[in-house]
Image (cartoon, rainbow, N blue to C red; front, side):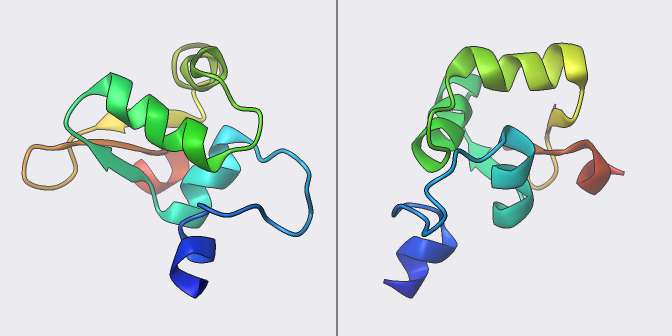
Length: 83
């Protein structure tokens, strides 16, 4: 159960929706082979987050970035963590 909670895969006690930035901060980013899979990973961990919310944060607000941090695989991380 602790692992599922740490990965935000079970409902948090607060019951309030998490922001995209909050999800990525708590997870230290997400890794995926492609952008659709990365979006799905964040969506699964954030109550009420849709792909358009994630893309808005990435493309307009710029609080998250898509990068290739390790071994050439795609990561979504907060802009603060990417620096």
